[in-house]
Length: 212
Image 1 (tube, helix red, strand yellow):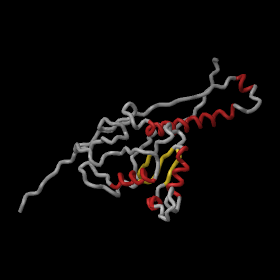
Image 2 (tube, rainbow, N blue to C red; image 1 turned 180 degrees about the horizontal axis):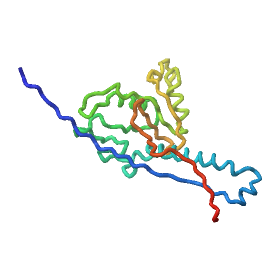
Image 3 (tube, rainbow, N blue to C red; image 1 turned 90 degrees about the horizontal axis):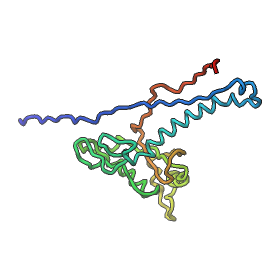
């Protein structure tokens, strides 16, 4: 019989993660403590906690806000996070685009779903079903549009009695108040690879300074 063909695995990109340190505090003087008639000092820890949560949300949103330029995030192919020119590890660009165009609408949602259906791996083998679109991330300005597109029983924007086929895809949406664009929208799969890693979780400490 014929000999067995052998294939070599393709080396992927190296990944590295650099943690960023954040810190913030406040000072309460003795005079403030003694003259705090309205119990304002006790509200400061809660305000500092909200500041920490806000920083986490802003940092996460900025990955998408700045995902169209290489000055903020670049992938192994040296392109922006969102690009129509991403390359596979085998060098081809077929099936690698994750950049759509157009305002949020029935047409652009269907195009996005089709992109997921036509995904291929780094060998060009179709992997439809491995990444299921699940969640739309939208700015507040697109909330009503998303509701009409995803929640209407009938096809939105038409007098015909068609069903709303988008409901069959079980998409949901989340409003992100920290998006800088009022028109950009994003979709992530159930098994997306966006990660948030804590080196050390948020900590609160206090200390007395008797010198000053």
